[in-house]
Image (cartoon, rainbow over all chains, first blue to last red; front, side):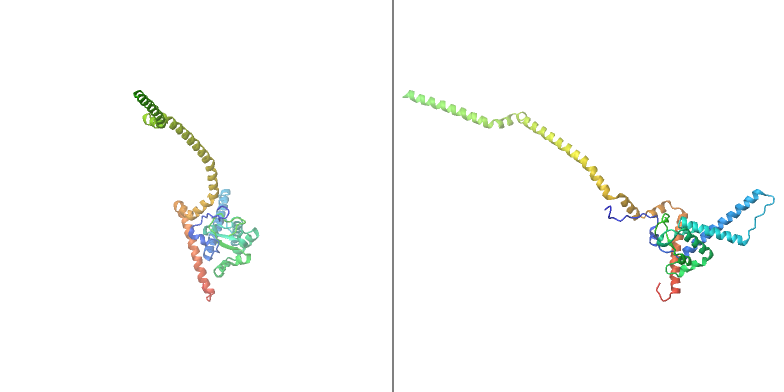
Length: 169
Length: 145
């Protein structure tokens, strides 16, 4: 009874969503997750701008003006922040905040968490060519262009503890 | 002649008395236990019964002590073996899985935010299915989705 019996797994996932776990995520979920991640990055950018303005005001309140930022600098900072945020989240947690809210997880081959190189490459591709996400709609395996190029996948995973470095989906 | 008849009668009487005495002694030996039991029921058999009762009580106490000792030695071993064979951790996990513990926790302690997130996830998954279905029909109309 002890050795032969298969051990049941206690999961925090509700019963109605258990059959979805581990399956490739579709376009809507991934788009919503990307939108949330973009909102996070824009919020951080805006916060950084306000903090910088506040420091300038504290240093010289008489001649204070809101600092002007060129479009190229703004886009560059946003892109750099987005790449860093996405790569760091995928490497360290297996998911970004948007993925966490939508119950998604980014996995490499065999369901393992991405390494730094692959996470950075995927983040750069997602930042430079976000339209590659649309390939999910027509791909039978629900893979974006980035997934096809880097052999990654995004799966439904509501469990908060399944993103271990060696875990499999 | 008359004297002879008197002697015979006397002899017969003497023998009759002796035979009666022998018969009485024999009857006394045979009837003595029953007579004692009937005439003094609380005395003669009481000692034997008390002795028997004391023997029985000692035997009963000895057997009870042995049974209690055996019970105390056996029950922990049996209980430990039963607990080991039950695999309580797996049993508890299976029970928790069967009763859908996450749903109970969600209903009892879940916040509005958690419920909203869950609904968003479920709706997004259904939308994913719908998009995949219609995109599949548009891209590969010859294949059944």
